Length: 223
Image (cartoon, rainbow, N blue to C red; front, side, top):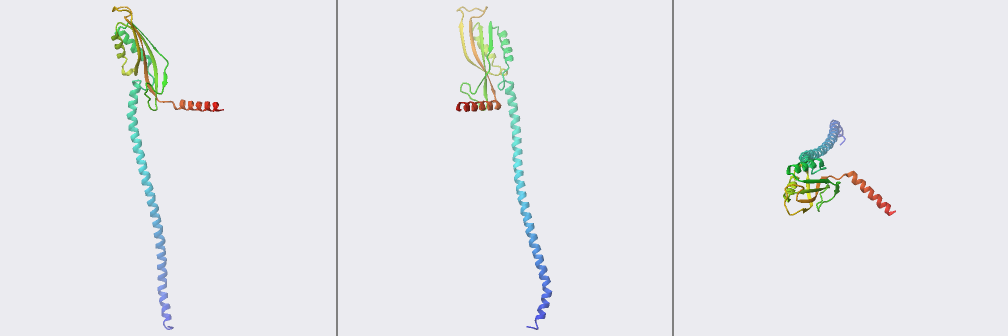
């Protein structure tokens, strides 16, 4: 055994540095591999997050694009409704001009008309538009005509789509005399109550103030 000891020592001197180099290289590759694996995992997570953000942005872009197309479509419809005075205020002057033109065209003996103050209603005759309010403008039409068909002609002329939407709430007529006269003030006197309707979106500021006033009133009552 003593004779073999120097030979073993010589082998270790030859093998030792290689073993140490192998261990160092193994350690470096292990640490480097772990570092590369962690970097790859981080990059993969970042890529996944980026793909999710990209998909979210693409969805928002599609949503905005659809919203723009929808807004363009409804803008045209809204403009048309405003032009017909179905949304917004009615053009009273235009209505008066049309009625005066109808009176002269049909040669109505007498015609008087009066607009009453506009009122805001949440519903009209049981109809309640969502997120909108009815703006109701009462209109009293007093007339003298030769026969009932002349009144029908007047009401038919008021169906002009540019004048908005109106309803005849009531009409009362009385004949002056049995004989039919083609001259004078006419044979039939009457009056009709009409309502011109338009839609208006609610005013959020006004509703907020109304709610605050209600709360204040409630607090005052409670105190």
